[in-house]
Length: 86
Image (tube, rainbow, N blue to C red):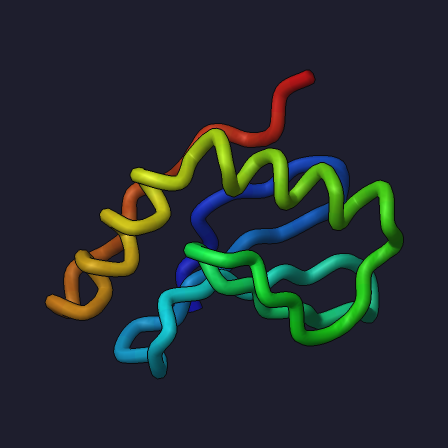
């Protein structure tokens, strides 16, 4: 399970050959969440401040997330993405 970023205890992952729509997986402590890249549909729960941080990070790195999704569909390794910055 390729880790693409990590910040404040939040781990962002993408799976090779995962189902559509394009999305990320987020781990924080015992929480497991998936969030679609295009419209931010959240499945699971995170503390609200961390969810807001992840959503801001996703907006800032939207193009990189889409590119990584495309790379994984071609069975290529994803590129790391910079962590959240204030």
